Amino acid sequence: MELAYLYGQPSATAEFKTQVEDFMVDELMDIEFSGEGEHVCLQIVKRGENTLTIAKAIAKLAGVQLRDVSYAGLKDRHGVCTQWFSVPVAIKKHIDFSALNNDHCFVLQQLRHNRKLRTGCHRGNRFKITLRKVSDIRAVLSRVNAVRQGVPNYFGEQRFGFNGHNLTMAERMFDGEPIRDKKLRGLVISAARSALFNFVVSERVKAHGLAVSWPREIFLLEGSNAFFEEDLNDSNVARLLAGDIHLSAPLYGKGDKGIVAQEQQWLSCYQKWCEGLCQLGLKMERRALRLLPRDFAVKTLDEHSLELSFSLPKGTFATAVLRELVQYQDVSKGSTEENE
Image (cartoon, rainbow, N blue to C red; front, side, top):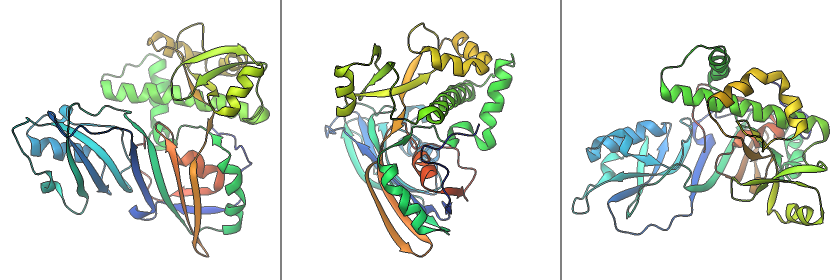
């Protein structure tokens, strides 16, 4: 699926993730830890390691099952990423988790809390990305101001598996081939839904970008999954300008509400997938059309290297920002996790 560019295809090329230090992520939390309770929360820096491997090491040291270790979101293996984990530990028991420290893992903080961390409990991620072998520094810099205004909120290619394998499996699943493994089945369903979202967003970008509103829209409430359909009027225009609500696109599922005629028309070529998602019992949801990077900064390191830094809300992808700046080649290829 070729996704449309909001600002036209970039002319410059670059390498991405040449070294693990070229992709740095800090998890942004809103939780005030209680300092007491039956859970230990660990802030860990991992280098060149995936989230599940760290979770397994925590479980082994604590003497619990892997399912008892929780975290806010997955982080890429090929990078230096700071994230939080939690594990149940009896109040009267002390475990020194600094025993986990090695070249790939370092415990920054160990705090007690009265509840486990849950997926999505963070507010977002802060990224620092180094691009190398940049063919034209000025061409990239010329697009920075535009990208600051927002980019299409595409799901990243990580969502679809290596070489899009998850989508191949989705096609077979919708043709009637069962997937026995529940975790794999969930990944495939998520990939299919994400691909349909990307397709609708791409079609809308082709039609008129992201700034033009339709006479009747389905608006997404800021900081919520709630949405409502309404004719364009003074009130919702003012709310759009204030960032209280956002234009959105469908995460396909069953239900009469949550999709407009134009979106349904675009998706008619994926009717089998749409019907399959409904049969699986997924409910129609919405996701913001536009992704707005916060605190965007750029630094020229040398004539062929750039350092970018910005913050994104949870569930979004740094590659959605990168693709509007430069045609990048991910030289780490094979990383399958996401920064969610």
